[in-house]
Length: 375
Ligand SMILES: [Cu+2]
Image (cartoon, rainbow, N blue to C red):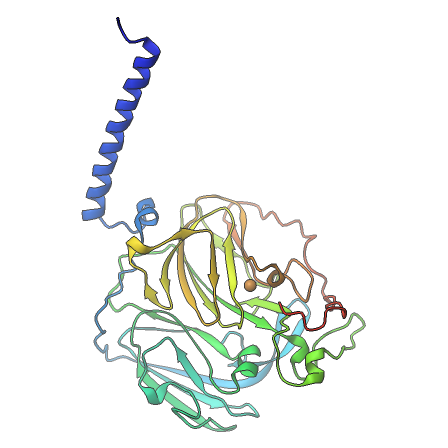
């Protein structure tokens, strides 16, 4: 007695499916062993090799010089919200320092602030005297003084530099910047787009002159101002110094392989969540994660002082958001949407913003009934 036709069809289908799976597995194994996986879909499902050498890089003989001036400057963190920032070269974050591993970095800091300062090279393996930590490794750089830091770029990765003197005030007012060291040997990984996001938090009511603006143009004394000093009542949150909607959208093209470097200089953790895509975490604190240990996720919590590199394939056209899922951090002084929202805009897709969701130019102050409510 023959097997009924329907069952036979199922059996044949299963056998065919198994055969296909076997062929695919062999092909995948062969591809993994011999062909570069960068730029293919396989790169995201089997891990991503950033191609960073583990050996200590040889000196390249190149000296990369940078001039930084620590100075007070007004900085607009959100539409109509200007704060008395402390900056490198008048901008927040400070200028990107990008060199190749093995280069010699020579950075001269001129202190035009009314207070002492220093620079710490966060994550780099510098000689102790260059670590920028008064009173241990150097004297504070006093107002009007200059200091030159010089050290080899020890290893490739995503890092930052920031003040290490009166740090709470100086960092919370903007004294930091991104630092990227590229591998000396070009990596097998090639990216169609690269973005860097420096995550910061601001407490405008703790700043000199009190920027807690009112609708009539006057200002309201904040609780922190009356107590003196900085505290953690952060009410604005910025990506590269700008809160949504001031931050520029990222433009991607369908098919792009996108690398994002995340740097958290704020005193808070930020669970960053990407809509419409997964991403693979390929490095932490500048250290590449071994491909077989990499995780593919849609949310990554980035703690204070951490950096991460993530990679995603732009395979879902639209207007998407990449935002902090601590939702107080997607507000501007208590009004949403704002803060840590990064728009990812595909080319050729009309932006879907209605224009109605932008926060008012003069944000509403936090209700006075919630004193000391941390974000
Ligand atoms: Cu956050």
